[in-house]
Image (cartoon, rainbow, N blue to C red; front, top):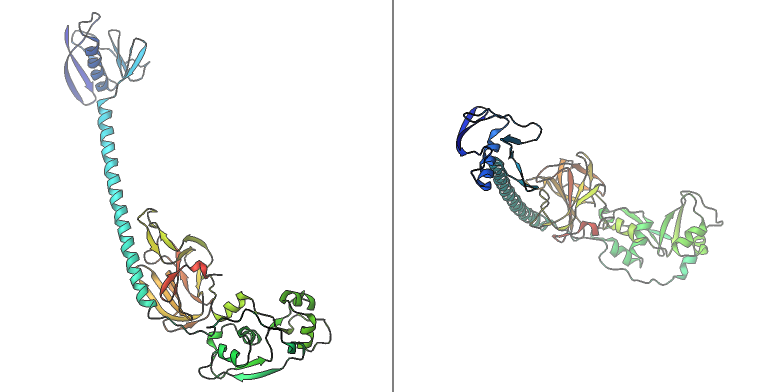
Length: 403
């Protein structure tokens, strides 16, 4: 028997000419399933109307299921105790559209990532050219400590006699190395005895004191004893007593002692010679020296990073890592507000992405002097300081020089 089924779907009607079984089947099971599948998914919670037959309401006891003449119709058709799941054509179309949209989004993201990576490479190349032009023009090789000291110094018997000191006035062209050599002393003896904190900035006509033997000047601290000082520097108590013309081993806090044949620590000597960098700021290291991924995407291609990045809030003071002369202070498209300092020994340092610059080109700064504040200017992924160290015009790993 043939019937016309009219299916109501909210605001429109779909007319389907199909074959419907009543109780006696005149169609195959496959045809029956196909017909009922089509009708079910076009219904959407309304009625099936068949001419000459009473409309059959949706069976609310089973979700997404309709019944007509005792035949199960819906997304699940049960046959021989097995359930076959039907997929709606509408669902397939929606799924297809979603897949296309996701595919399009992935293509766009891939294109953006490549664009950012290319831009990053271009900017890295621009920054390298920019820096190479600057640092190559501001390399200073002047240093007071140009030759290595002998590894072994023979004990001088004169250390057990009273200490004699003479004065020397620095002349134009003098270096501390030449002065030390002239008086047959180690460089650290003159530095320590005159408590020099920066040997590179000693004015002409300055009068310094020259002891008659090698050793260092020591300031007595709380808890010190003659025995502990002698043990710390590996010298005898008698030599300290004789060199300082002491009649007792009792010491006072703040008292100055000359320690014959003692040496400055490597740390103190490098600091005085200006060969020890300090951290310009303290904070979290977010990017190291060397090859790295794009800081914006976290993906390749890899590019060379000529310094380190230290995260800190905007406004954090930035200090000079080493004493020197400001050779550049300005704004750059990549480094934002930046400062470049030239140091003795062929070193330069770069401070980038700052929010404020507090120095000017040509100005001399001391180690630890405030030169600016942390910012997020230029090509930056967030508030931080970019810090680079250059040796003879080539970028080197700052972590090998920082203390």
